[in-house]
Figure 1 (cartoon, rainbow, N blue to C red):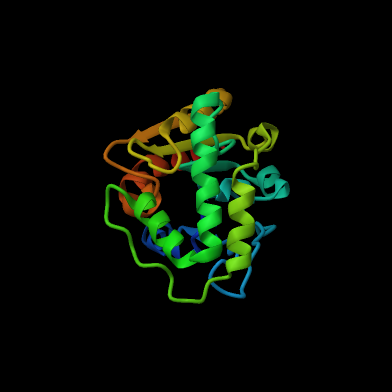
Figure 2: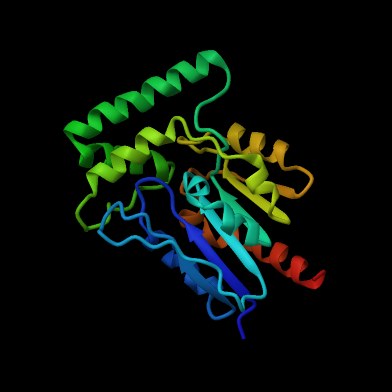
Length: 229
């Protein structure tokens, strides 16, 4: 019998296959349901927790935190955030200007050469590791561009996150997409119910490049929660 259900949300520029590497840790103890935005296909999936699930867990990578609907947060017992952020741009004016300029350049270039923008994005996401190839399927350019524009203005309501009983925040020390300061900022707002883990020599793709290390931090949190239930 499964211990519970995990719904995993991928970030911008990814598809649900990024979570395949996690099946070795989760199955058969957990039922893994995958959100699919449809950046590389016509398929979109917005899974829900089964009514019979005894433990509901969310995995959210990067912008995936913003893709999860409020009703899923309300039903969740545990939330694990990888490379997450409340709002993408820095608050400090001088850093915010540069961040907005970089994102604007990405948006402008995407219209001309989306494949090139995605390849550069993957290089930064996987740094300091080598990037994996882009998914083979055709790009849904309109949807990718739409969400790339949303990225700069999206701000998640803290109340949504606070509806979850326990939260684990995992961030790579060398994240080139979302600086670790963003992970720490998120934790400072969720300190009463959250734990923060920072992984050295690791970038934005930490749940996919350092999945074993991530699981070694997550599994004890799940087991501890189950003991107290």
